[in-house]
Length: 297
Image 1 (cartoon, rainbow, N blue to C red):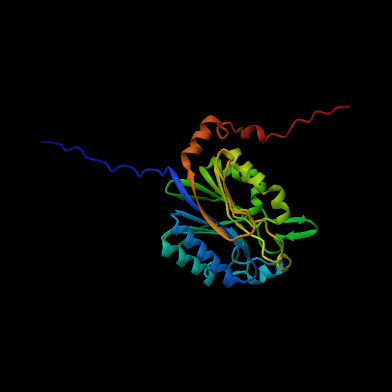
Image 2: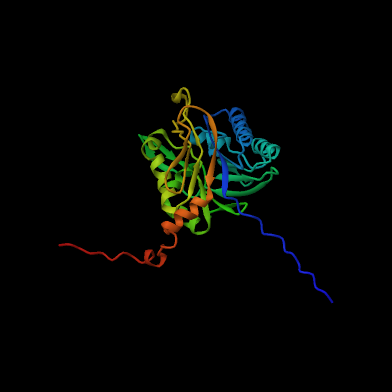
C-alpha cells in the first residue's frame, strides 16, 4: 500500500497593513443632511481603497441633550439602514462611531455599531464613560440622555484586533490598556470633542493612548459649523490618526468636511512593543493593593 502525503491548506496570512478611512463633517440637527454626509464619506473612503471606514460620534445628529433624546432612533431605523446599504454597495465594513441608540424598551445608549461588508450589523459597543462635565460654563450631562455601557469590545478584522471606544472614553487609560492586553493593535476613538477641551487636550490624549499601548489610533470627528452660535456646542474637529510611536499620521483640520484613507503599518505595532514591552511589564497584582501612606510630620 502506498501513502500519499496530505497537503494541508496554508493558514490565512495576517495583513501587514490596514487602510482605514478617517472622516469628519459638520453634524448638526439636520438628520437627512448628516446621513448624506456619512454615506458620501463611506463612498469616498472606499473609492480611495479603505478596508474599514470610521465615522464620528454624533455624526448623524448633534444638538442639545433634550433634542438628542427626542431624536434618538434604533438600529432598525432608516438612517442606519442607509449606512448598511452604503457599506454593502462598496463592500467595505463601517463603524458608526456613536449615535443615540433607542431600544424597544425606551432605553437609550450611545452606541458604536459595526456594519460588515455585506451590510449586516455585526457588533456594538456602548459608551462606558459618559460626559458629565462642565466646560467654559456649559454643563454637559450625558447621563440625562443615555445609559452607560458595561463591556469593552474588540473588533476582529482579518486577524487584526481593533478596540472600540467613543470620545470621552479617551480620558480613561484603563479601558485602552485592557483592550491592548486583550489583543487590540488599533483603537478607534470617534468623537465630538468640544472646541475648548479639544484645543487643550485632544491631540495630547490621543497620542498618549497610542504611546502607552504601542497601538495605532484612528479618531474621526465632527467639526464646528459656519455659524457655531447656531449649534448646540462647538466641536473641535481635527480628525486624527496616530501611530504606535505617537507620530501624527493625519490631521484633517477643524473647518472642512474631509475624508482621508490612512495606511496603518501593523508591523510597527510589533516592533515598538518588542523594543518597549510595556504590555509585558504590566504588574496588575501590585496595582490592586492599596497604596502605603508615608506621613511627614
